[in-house]
Length: 55
Image: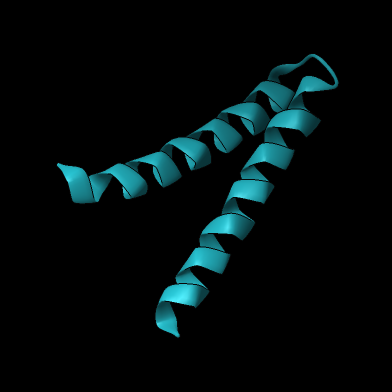
């Protein structure tokens, strides 16, 4: 049961991070760059969490 909750939580974080990147690309500015970097950091965090068991 706990594993299913973790998977759903990771999926929600993935969708939010992807949305931040897409929203940040619509206009140009420092705030939008920060939004995109926040989304990228979230995706990299998810990738790190996935690859952690293989290192």
